[in-house]
Length: 328
Length: 254
Image 1 (cartoon, helix red, strand yellow):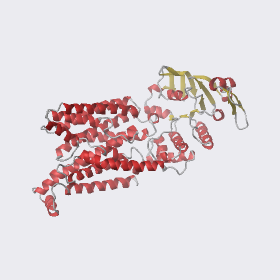
Image 2 (cartoon, rainbow over the protein chains, first blue to last red):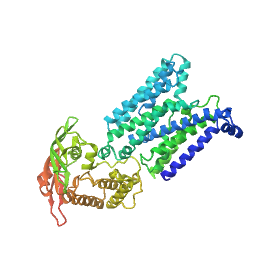
Image 3 (cartoon, rainbow over the protein chains, first blue to last red):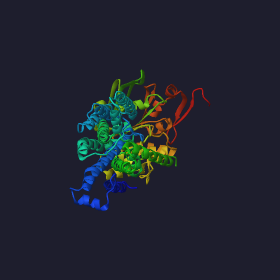
Image 4 (cartoon, rainbow over the protein chains, first blue to last red):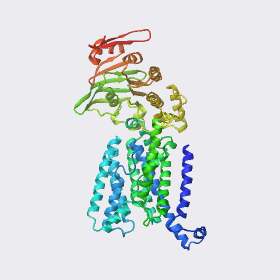
């Protein structure tokens, strides 16, 4: 499939999911009620459609796009198809920040948990950006990332350990499992600066990702300012990941799977894979959110659970097909 | 002014001296071969010249400028490099890979330059093939095409003939001669001493990190140097088509 056709197809899928996101939910709306929701701003259906479902769908699309883009950037930077936004420990940092904020009883302060998550992610991001500028080899960055992830995971466990009450513990757990339920426009707007700057940095780094396909040394002799581009890639992916976790908790698999879904259609080019990865991430997460809404369970399924439940088999299928194409 | 200039270049790694006071100057329009046994320091010499390996002593210059003080874009304007590893991270199309040598050109011009270079390396019409679906030798040709696309005044290639069939080896070396004819300085590492003697204007023989001989092949590959550097009993035999190497391992089968 040509890249343009792929992007168009994904855009159509996003529009369809937006429509589905408005139409589907806990409360079943009839066609008449939906029409009323559009016609009458004071009606209950209007509130359901535009104050509950639309921001929720928008949050899912934005978080999915950010994770898809961050995943594609990490895979390109590290030249590793297993890389995803969590591989360098940024998600772990954001999770720890949120856990600390919840146990410090900041849940009542609007935006406090999100700010703590984003702040912690940025701290990890700054450290990683410094390391990325200093060390050229992707293996080094991955090893540091594994160490960060393990350490931050242990710190989060420590927060659980010292949690003042089982209720707080449940709150932290619930937050970490990921969800875009009850997100309003303010939640999205608060993360916009990080998302915009992160996206800009990732797009700036795209040329460097393409050149890195030929290896570090060839890239460093290509004439591109590779140190700056590598730092931009890490900083951009960190911002996007941090903002995503701040908005929706930790949602796995989207950042890993989205680039794989669209790589063949982008000619394998790590620069040209960025846009379709973002679109595919939005599709995956919006679909997962709709699944979470309509699967009949007493407690709504968490987004991170749905993406893992459906994402893991899907990813195995992609890996199976990729392996078959490699072995001919 | 030399395109590449090394004076007493020394690189130490892990307590070992891998390049030991090596000196070499390469002028525009000539092809210089760097030869030596495995582990002699050939790749380190190339990397030191390009500023990829830090010098512990000595000096490395590209076009008369200290390589350590060049910015990335300045260095790219002065030299292009084909590393020994033929690794490509993703299955990009051959045309796209070759066009990366001219990323600063508009897309259409870069594509045209890539197509022309792929034609030169015998890969015409394969612009859309994924490089990871190719054989190792085909991929090596695509990467050689990328090097040619750069049009840099100094081309440095580490083992450009490795993994190529005999026809492609000769083609690659002929292309480097063409590049020298257009005025480029060319530095190659080669293991095939016969090819090195035939296609290079001068050779630098490395052994244990030191340049033990330098000059035209007939001088640099004297029997005593073949013995000292390569542990070979042998000689260069002139033929109407150029010199060939006749050699056997010291103490080996005759």
